[in-house]
Length: 111
Length: 111
DNA sequence: AAAAGCGGTAACCTAAAAGTGACTAATGGA
DNA sequence: TCCATTAGTCACTTTTAGGTTACCGCTTTT
Image (tube, rainbow over all chains, first blue to last red):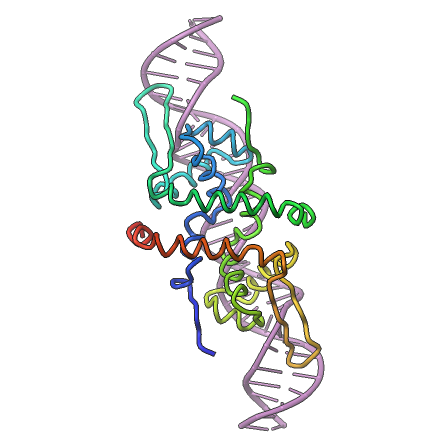
């Protein structure tokens, strides 16, 4: 049997690396609706800690999906938004949300 | 500011919990094309160990996305397949793969 | 007679991720 | 005068995930 897929050519592995973190998709989903400040994101993903949120945002930024704009004020103000590249994910986010709504019976049955 | 989302009502969080593991989406993708035996899956996800593969398969099974059929033979034969519920994910898998193909320039640029 | 084949499990260990609490900056308000 | 505010960072500990090796059962092949 010859090998068909590996880490590099599997068409979903590279993608999952981008938003596979437990919080990345929720964060992207939140930002797909509005530009948000750090604290606003944190409130909307309640069980995430500052440290982890910072970390996830940094990775999303490094991957070019979100932008970070820091205002020179005190107290500090930082706004996060989807980049143009990040916005290309929106249809996917919508599809995922739609799938979840259709599947909610199965999802709750399983829990 | 009132809270709008939490872990339970965010429409993408529950979904990411289903296939958010590093290997789950690739496994589902493989099974979307064929029913596969344990060893066949392992060959197609080369850097995964038996232990982790077993673990991921058990979780996917517990979540109702895949089925496990064990034949009473020796050496053992076990076949994994998408359940009907799991099959409802196929369009999503296709969309994700399509997005990745369109975004490959950005993805490689970032790396 | 010995080894390979398959689909695991068990025990053990390391590495990565995540949680926690304290700390910072400059300003506005009580 | 002193506290609250925001978006983090730092140091430290705990939890989790993952890797590694060895082992199993029974039949067929060498």
